[in-house]
Amino acid sequence: MVISPGAKADLEHSGYRIVGENEHSAVEVCRWTKKSILNEGVCYKEKFYKDLQGIESHRCIQMTPSLPFCDNKCVFCWRNVDLTHPSWRGEIDEPKEILDEAIEAQRSLLSGFKGNPDADRSKWEDAQRPTLCAISLAGEPTIYPKLGGLIEECNRRDISTFLVTNGQHPECLETITEPSQLYISAVAPSEKTYVRVCRPLLQDPWRRLNDSLELMPSFDCIKVLRFTLVKGWNLEDPSGYAKLVEKAEPDFVEPKGYMFVGHSRERLEMDNMPNHSEIKEFANKLARETNYEVSDESEASRVVLLKK
Image 1: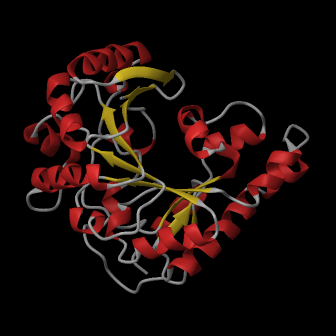
Image 2: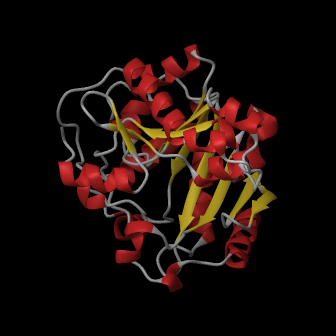
C-alpha cells in the first residue's frame, strides 16, 4: 500500500472510498451528482456537452486509478499534493477490478438518497448504473500503466470516459485507447509561468506538455483544452494561451476560475480566486486571439466554453 493508514483515514473521512486490492484507486461522489439527484442543478459538463454525448450528472462516477501518483504539485490543486509520488510504486490492480469496486463504492456512497424524500427516485435508480466515468478525481491517470485497459473496460460496459490529464506523459497518449473525451490542462501561457504554477517534478515539463498538445489533433474523440486560472499567478497573457490553442486544435476551450477550496487554501489566498466576470473578460480576449467563439458559460463553476 502506497498510501499510509493515516492518509487513507483522512481521505475516507473527506468522502473518498479507496478501491482495489492495492489501494491505488478511489471514488468520490461529485457534489453535482448529489445535486442532480435532488433536482438542484447539474454539472457544467452536462450543460456544455449533453447534446454531444448524452452526459447526465446523476449517472457520472468520479474516480481515479492513480490516487497517490502525480508529477505536478500545482498551487491551485485542492488535494493534498504532499501525498503523491511522481512515478508508479507497488503492484497494479486490473482495470476490471478497479471498475467493479468503483461502481460498488459509488452505489454505497449514494445509498442514503434512497430514503431521502427530497431525492428523485428515478434519478437515484439510474445512478446505480453509471454511464460516464470521469477519470479525473486525483492524481495523474496517465501514470497508471493499464489506463488503456480501463478505458476499454468502460467501453465494454457502454460507459463513456472523460480523461483529464496534465499532459506530462505524451508517450501514454500516443498508445492508449481513445477516451470519449480528452481534456488536457495546460494552465500556463509560458514555460516560466508553468514551472511557477504547476511545480513539476519531471525533467522538461514544458516540452512534455507541448508534445501532448501536438498530439491532440490526432485524436478522433471530443477534445478540450482547459485553463485553470488563478488571479495573480496565470490569469494573464491571452495571446500566449492562444498559441497553445492553435497548436492543440481542440474542439472546445474551457477557461475556468480557480476555486479557493481544499488544500489549495494552504498555498493561496481568497484574493487569488477570480470572479466569473473576470473569467468572461479573459474568455472574450482569448476568443479575439483565436478562431473560437464564446458559446456557453456556468457562473456557479466560473467557467466559460469556447468552440470553433
